Image (cartoon, rainbow, N blue to C red):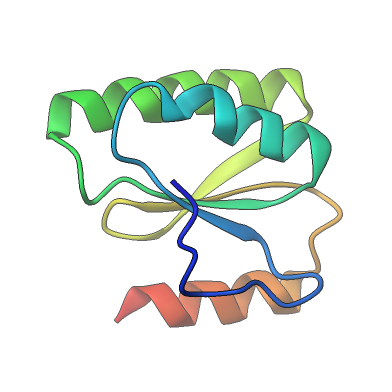
Length: 96
């Protein structure tokens, strides 16, 4: 689920807080339609988190995007058009 308390700035990836397996399709649609997504899996069971991660990584590959770890249970899914500088800022934000 997208966190409504944190409005995204322009060029800021959407953050989706995954609560159920049904959030998979929304993540993929967001990647396809809008671009980069921060996928937060910390709120769900480990087995479900693994399923979501596998599903989204497979879909990202089909969309010519890739996933990288930002922190424990938090992933950035983006195409190669995301500036390296922005990716570094996101890594720093979620690594603590």
